[in-house]
Length: 443
Ligand SMILES: *Cc1c(COP(=O)(O)O)cnc(C)c1O
Image 1 (tube, helix red, strand yellow):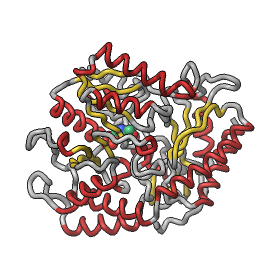
Image 2 (cartoon, protein in one colour; image 1 turned 60 degrees about the vertical axis):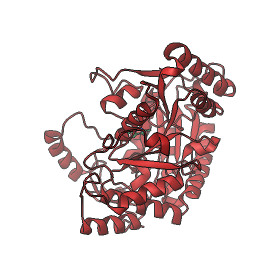
Image 3 (cartoon, protein in one colour; image 1 turned 90 degrees about the vertical axis):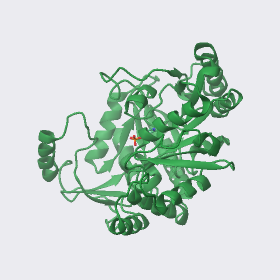
């Protein structure tokens, strides 16, 4: 556990004077297209706290977007990555390999769903993993089409922008996009016209009908889905949807890819979110939580599919960097040692209980959803289901001012999402939720 004191402390305006000074330098030199949720500059971070350069300590409900699940300075991550740094920083696995890469692939084979023989390839970012999953699926099936879903998010590179559904800010003005990408409906229970009970069956039937009629199942290389949709608003596909789509893929020789980049590695109280409905993906993409903050990503899947790409067809200069691999081994060690799946489930229990109490008093809280430490509320206009992005921004702003870092998301910008580090103390968690509750009551 980190040396950063585990307590909220607000001693200046947020952002404070030193952060504002740094922000002025940043504005002069950092490209405007790179945004920040909250321009407080970080001095150190760990456990459930981010300490800024002005000495403020913020409760972290963001984990750097679901990355630092073990905290931002986890002992095992720091120890293993530091030792690796001293030994060597890089050789390039494609030039002379090293053991850490192999160990990470062994861990992925052990932890991902399914008893089949598995192989992995390592990359630097989530988007790169998704791109490679598409390359592998196309090589294996000798087909081209890729099917994705409404509200899906898969990254910001050219192919993954095409796979991502939301225009602003991810795609606007950045086309043309990669071809042979098809988007179909997802089972969004809260907004399904006939209600959440019918949603899984109806949405899967619609999606399968569209794929069959508009694309042709025989043309589809891969179906890619987030088992809990992240940027799109923490949408849990209604029960029955994922198994139906996975079965359709299986029946038609389509590679079923679970993008668990945000939902994986204990975040939802399971190693992987698709386990909840017993879905075993052919390929699974991981990143974010995998390496305790170091940049690492992976594609893991059935050995015969993973081996379909020709030798030399996959890779990259830095993919599976040895320091990042050491970080991943430290992160996985921490997850097992502290039983972070159980911690995530406990976070869900605390959060959902507290948020339900808020909802009773506040009718702008339309929906509370998510699993484990991936929880969100969807804010609407009083008495309707109309999205309320203004209130969402106002609540986030009030939380930030009081020293609680929260993030927003959702196709309509009206979802407040909570992604605390799984190692956050329960007192801190409750204190953060006090601030969230007050912020909602105040708008
Ligand atoms: C964040 C994310 C990505 C992209 O990962 P990067 O590391 O930002 O490239 C892809 N898919 C999902 C589900 C994500 O949450």
